[in-house]
Image 1: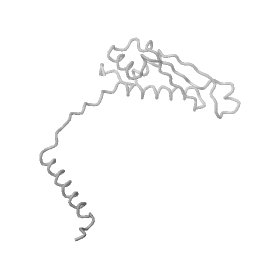
Image 2: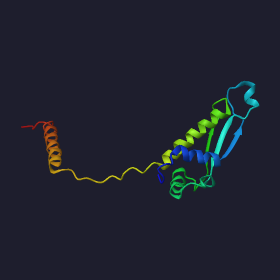
Image 3: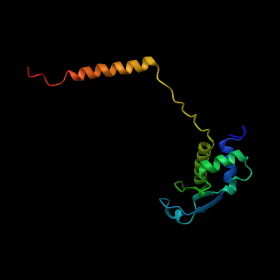
Length: 141
């Protein structure tokens, strides 16, 4: 990441405060209460929510979250309380941010097998070929 003091949770908190939160009625069990209370939490994140973050972090987030193509939409409606659904959305956002900010894995360098390794492989192939050659049909002589 660009700054050592900036954790994925800090970045997710920054995005969550600037993102567009909406709440709606959630389906599923809950009795009469579910018909009256908006408990489903939805968060929509656009590039506007990244204002105030360092430029290298913004570039990685835009690329990692795909914000150049479309906004990021996260929702949760499984819990009965709005706050719990909001926490679930925030946890998902934190995981996505951590994945986007994670350094790329090191590129693989092609390595050449040693001469001994090549010889072991070829001698094993010769041994196996000889075993299979003995399984042929016998000569009619």
